[in-house]
Structure formats: structure tokens, C-alpha cells
Image 1 (cartoon, rainbow, N blue to C red):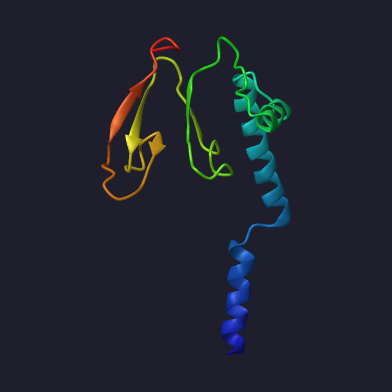
Image 2: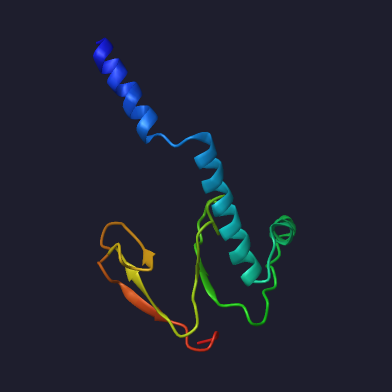
Length: 121
């Protein structure tokens, strides 16, 4: 029993990220989120302000279009955003290689492809 406990503690120490690693990862995610919002001409304050008033935020004119999830639960709606870069084809499906990975009953490996030609079409 003691040997198993020591082995479990050793494995936990080897494979559990340290506090510093978790903080670095969190900062990297926050930086990426801020970069995506900035590319769209948005900020967290603007989004919170618009959400509290029930308004839709205005995007920059040159911002890339994006897909966003819609859900009956307001806490889940809008939590996934997929930018649609101009001139690039994005595949949607259950294949892990798809840019937009979706899983569920009846989802094919490649359900569709989306192309943004000019930011509008």
C-alpha cells in the first residue's frame, strides 16, 4: 500500500503542471483572447457594456467575419468564436484535422467547407 502511494505521488508530481506553468498557460490564453478581440476591434469592457444593455457590438470595418455559437443558455451562447480568414478554406466536421471540430451523433468527418472570399461573401 505504501509503495502504491509513493508511486501515485511520484506520478502526480511528474505529470501535474506547476503553479507557474498554469499561470504561464493562463497568461498565454489571455493574450490570445485579447489579440482576437483587438483584431475584431472589440474589448472586454465594450462586450460587457453591450451585453448589459442587450446591444450588439460594432466591429471594425476591416475585421474578418466569424462564426459564433448560439445557445438557449445565455452563459454558453457566444463562448465559441471561429474567425473566417479571407481567402482560406475552413473544414467543419468530426475529423480532428478540421479547423472547426464538431462531435456528436450524425456528424460526418467532413460536414462542409467554408470559404470567405472578400470578408462579405
